[in-house]
Length: 116
Image: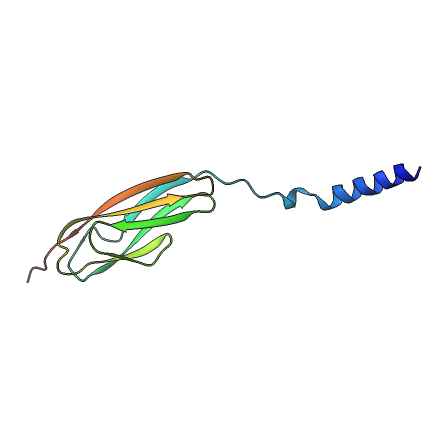
């Protein structure tokens, strides 16, 4: 009888304290929607905002530029150039999620000399 009562109490304890809330949420699939710059043509020294739009869970953003500087981190960054970076510059954003899925998109920003 004591063993049965103990087993019932133990079962209730496990049932009450091991709920679904303790389980981690499943990682959502990565869907990379867009990579957009506020302008596609700029002059040396100008800064523009670039935004990567994606859905999923545990997203991480990795930015790179063929020329110029990426300032900041996350879904939106600033792209800045200097006078020696004239031409077509490629900006890439790679996004990963908690399932080790990844996807990259690249855009081209044209840096042209100012016309006076």
